[in-house]
Length: 100
Figure 1: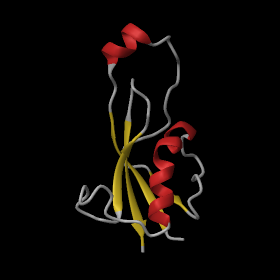
Figure 2: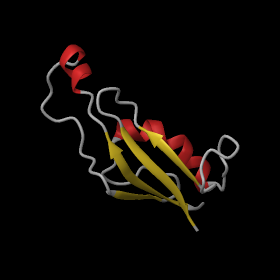
Figure 3: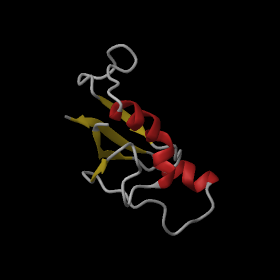
């Protein structure tokens, strides 16, 4: 299996949605832009968000098994994917790249 590098590319915060719909919470996310993780054997990297893993893990598994060119040319680098976590209030975008 190939290793897959996961890089935090962007973090968004929808304050209007949070104010209207979310119960107050003190701490929501440990991710930081530029943070990198390496998945070996399609396993969750240490320190990676469990909720975000649910969103990215199918793509990590596919890339680690050699898949490429998702959705017929979606990504410029065929051995990569841009996937966001499922937090509708503060989504995080991750770049997944196969390490050859």
